[in-house]
View (cartoon, rainbow, N blue to C red):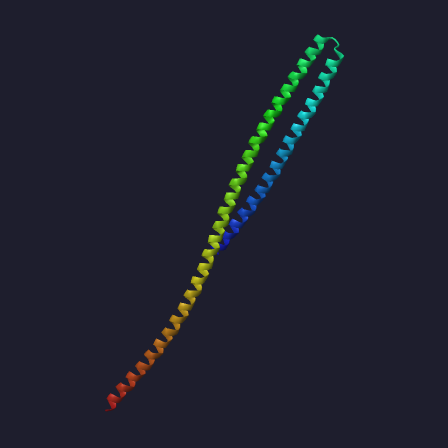
Length: 168
């Protein structure tokens, strides 16, 4: 019974680890999608800024004002790039952590599976040992019965011998 409970417990932990593994996979996919979205937003922002710069240079209206505006836009773009790079680095770090968690989860699953297999093997050996002991017990009972019968026969023979000696 203890082995079965242990196996059920190990099975339950395996199921729980599989659920965690699936959730981690989903979270990893979401993080990857987010990263791709940030990169496309950055490309769109870059394309938009490049278009603004081209328009400003071609019109050459009030050059100082254009340069200041360009400077502000570039600063914003730089901030956005920095922010996106920071977010990307955080996303990469999160991916690494999720991958590490996945690896640990898989290792734990392998360990639990090995433990389950060992317990199943132990349970099987215990069952065989029980069967062997039951067979041995049966054989010992049969031998004991034979000894008892032989004992009863010997006692009876002794009684008969004693009676014959008493008669003689």
